[in-house]
Image (cartoon, rainbow, N blue to C red; front, side):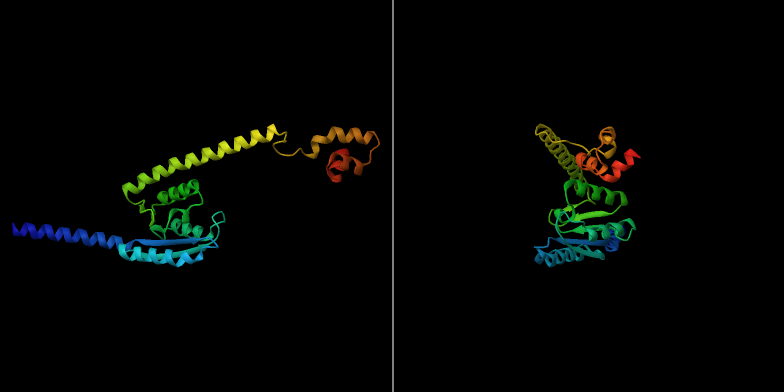
Amino acid sequence: MATKRASAKAESDYAIGQARKRAEMFRAGLYARVSTNDQQTLAMQNRAMREYVAHRGWTIALQVREVNSGAAKREAREKLLEAARRREIDLVLVWRLDRWGRSVTDLLTTLQELEHLGVGFVSLTEALDLTTPAGRAMAGLLAIFAEFEREILRERTRAGLAHARQNGKRLGRPATAAAHAAEVRKLHRAGVSKSGIACRLQIGRTSVRRILD
């Protein structure tokens, strides 16, 4: 009986050791971002993420930080994604979701790419860990929110177009000079100069010459 207990304990210790070893092998990529007028929280984000990595027993393979507005192109984030594509990191760690994604759609797109690459994603503030079943369920909810966001944008676009039509605005691409070909020739036959035709029809003189030639 004692032998069995000893064997079971040895197996348990081995499993714990292997789990700890796998955790220590996780290479984390840290991403911190602040807006141009909120740079004081950058150090706080980095400190919180580094403490979390130490607590989990991971290693920091790459750490990037970004200072820009939410709409700006995020070059540092792209650098982290490139590292994920090269399989140089095993997971991405951020302080908060809105630090990573420009919108729900953008957030979901990048999370789906990371999932496809087999790279985990963890957000500290929301306690979101996409390496767990609960985290993956949250990703499913994000997909619903992303579709909701796209539908709102489509509805706003349709409403804007309808409003423009009601106010007599012409929609679509502006007419090209070729669309005025018949009128150009008619004015030319009437003796109007090429410069005069271009001025009257609001097209370039080169276009007028091309039509007449």
